[in-house]
Image 1 (cartoon, rainbow, N blue to C red):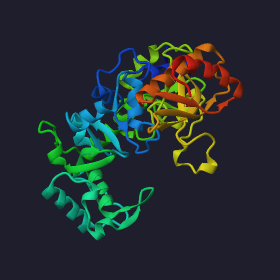
Image 2: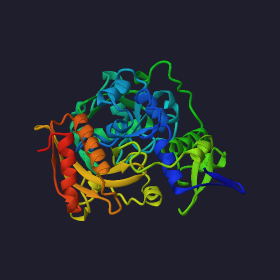
Image 3: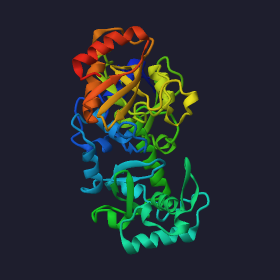
Image 4: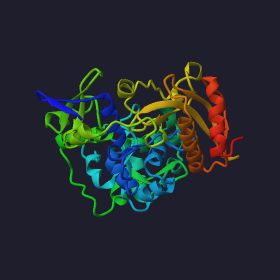
Length: 395
């Protein structure tokens, strides 16, 4: 049980871990969200990342929490039902369309990019207003295609202008053609029933703080000032873990009464690199003793593991990590390497649960078989291979 002594709320480390794993929207919560909209409401947002060595990050987050999820479910909510919308709180994310006004910055100081040409931005906006939904490739003039430094590299000036307009909320993603975003004016994308009443900077700050608290569950101070000041975020001490953490006042009783998890409770789960459970790397190390870096943007020579290495959650511990890649032509899920943590149990249960999760992961990607690369430490290769042979077609 959590304790409150002298006004200080205290959790044991196993309780804190169990709370994060069992709260609404977490992989081990007793009740699965009804659909992708319910999931996004529960966790706050789905972070989008364009890298898709396997499925993209937002699809991987949803997969671990919605047993029958397929990417078409999110596409339908975003572009047909319009219950969700792509936007940019501080990252590229999917949020409930009903909460759009907290992201609408059309009346706020304009977001600008380095080298931005106001005349070009105005012309891009006017072109969309006149012609309707357009992607970057719809802007073909020479100055539209001229490349400027932006983001991780160089990008056409018209595309940079589209990004600036999207961050302001002037345009929204109307739909996608493959991975390409097609934009239209916000007022033509938003359903008529959506409340677009402008919010004050103070309201936006409070909402953003609560969103981060919802996403983190047990969070550090960063980004929570408005929630802390209003008493919505309450401080918590975790025994044996340095620092002060914060939990929503509404969730404190849940956290305080959550029972610790057994090793294999809930099976194994492959987590997305930006999953809510692992996005706060300091919390991950402090509470779970798991040091994780997503190395996709790390130069190859400096990588310790692999470019898309994903953590393996098993019970209340991170037992392994693996680096997957999808050969879509041959429909083979390649496990380029697997690393077990030094303290991971050497048990049949772990190998069986991991093999079952890999089989689910392969099926989600439409893979007909799985290939297994090096396993570290090497004595674990044989039992893992045996478990995989029983669970999936292994090449």
